[in-house]
Length: 262
Image 1 (cartoon, rainbow, N blue to C red):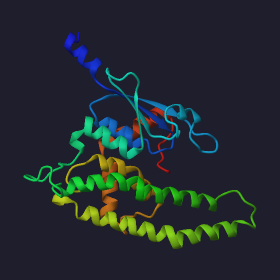
Image 2 (cartoon, rainbow, N blue to C red; image 1 turned 30 degrees about the vertical axis):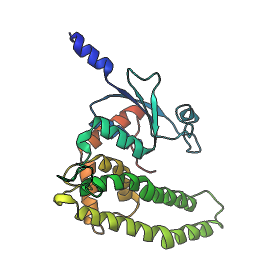
Image 3 (cartoon, helix red, strand yellow; image 1 turned 120 degrees about the vertical axis):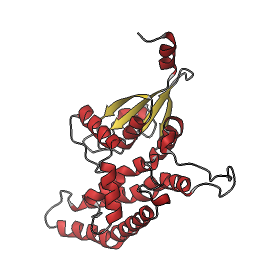
Image 4 (cartoon, rainbow, N blue to C red; image 1 turned 90 degrees about the vertical axis):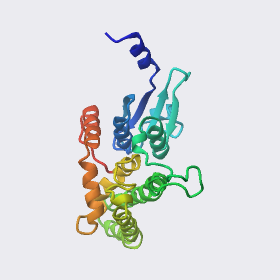
């Protein structure tokens, strides 16, 4: 039987609830939770026929988006609700997975302006880049490409396809090339010859970047021939045990194969 002290420690440990929406980017938070020494549960929600989120999510957060987490401790009267993938990732990593945060200060430069390590500055940069620069482009591309295959009269299809192709040629194609070329260079110059974005070790930012990277491999032209370093990085992410465990858990919860399409 557990001792009284052990029972008290269990009661005092924070608990996280992940409000998970199917076919969403919430998988990254589930992977991160697997890396944290913390109790958590997952509450799943289905999309509506129009692909929008379940309205029930608005009871958790006014915007009705996912991922959202709730954190409970013995001192909280009600769960603290956090939204936005970057904030959730930073918060969970700083409190429960410090091994996923690069060393902040160069030796002897603690607290100084520009005294941060390169790995830590990359960590903070990519925490914003993942959703701000990369995912916004990919979501816009997905929405435009859906027009190409939308059910319209046959004599209209050449027009819709022509419009979407123009977007691809003039905007998405060049921007994807710039983004993936940038990431190829960042990985090639990773601190201390590392294989991850911030150095030798997996960080919370790699987990945050996993969704757009794997989606890019499947639908945005990231091939081994065009971007060998980036392609190898994505493969490394897909082979990570924590990643595979999170995918298995999602598939067990939903009974459906996981597909990073958004």
